[in-house]
Length: 112
Length: 113
Image 1: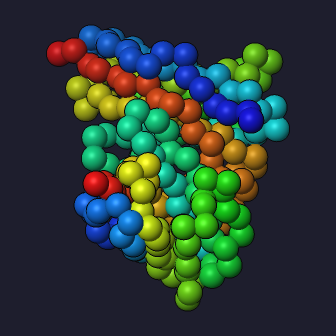
Image 2 (image 1 turned 90 degrees about the horizontal axis):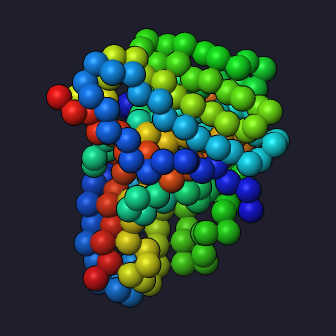
């Protein structure tokens, strides 16, 4: 079946640098996308979401970009901090009405 | 702390035993979801409730699994005759309504020996 996936399983960045985490999705019916952060031993924590009528959305230090043409989603973290170290998942849904489909995750390691 | 609680946080059991997990969602949330997560993977949907009605079940949810939300508040997930392949983190999430942000609990880590 169709699923959401990630290009890179691990990403290491220097503290203070910007991080970019990518995600590819294949379900063309998906119109709601979310990024979650998961720290060890904890449940996923909502970071930011975007609906398909937008191609960019900004939060505090985070930006999500959506390219519907190539079915690509990215999460940009500005001035990455040690506390950003975690596994990041993208997830997709149809209008937020269907259960979330998660990708496999990217582990972000911040080097001090 | 998202306001969603799960109990127990850890459960170790022997193969063939039954286990039951509990999830307490954020009080005003109508929707409650169960997911399963294995090491290195993203959460996989199992089932969800709108108030007390179970609206959808994944193909992952074998007949050994049953979930309830009798009063539209807390939910339980029971696994009968556990198998080693059931070892995973079981996550609960709740949302205020359809299309709303899902808030996840800390999960129950199940180890089947």
